[in-house]
Image 1 (tube, helix red, strand yellow):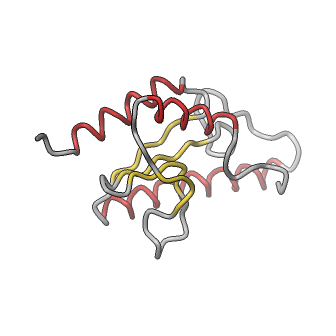
Image 2 (image 1 turned 90 degrees about the vertical axis):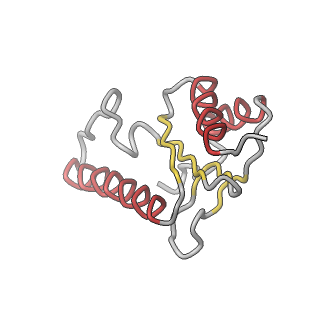
Length: 127
């Protein structure tokens, strides 16, 4: 598992590029809540929005996840724990006044970026 990158993956770079192209600025790879050991892929600190780009295998995408054939008990438990941790992270962020967005790696970056921009637009006060 050491060979799997935790940041700057191809889907993450594509999403960051699409979000940046919309004129949005963000922080990369930080903890939205410093006391919670969870790192978001994109963080809009002023707006309290955390974006997580979830890999289809690692987070058990309903469309693309296929159980491992070897050591399946271990991997099934691992993926279930990841999904449980994702739900807990979303809950902790919500309790702290944050909103989280979960994007699957198979989603089109431009569509995901538009959803992020829409949420930020709703959160930001009109002048």
